[in-house]
Length: 70
Image (tube, rainbow, N blue to C red; front, side):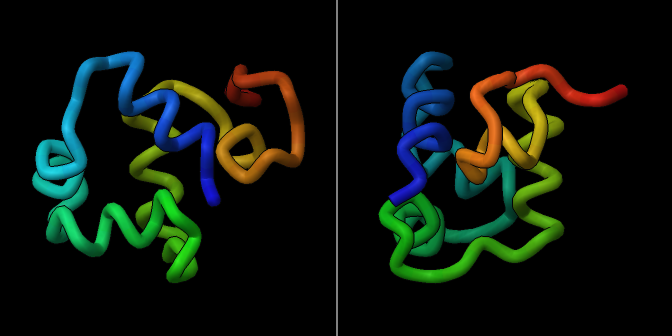
């Protein structure tokens, strides 16, 4: 499960449906991303990181530092 993706979405008071629209996918697909039922494509991970202004490594739990390297 991608808890950070869910937490970041909830911090912005967005629904899964709204995130699906932002990412050009359905609510069901987005829900599958959050639950870890399907792998998140690289392009979607980048969109999520940019949208939330965090690093992809943070989304993937590879670091606890949310800041991007930019």
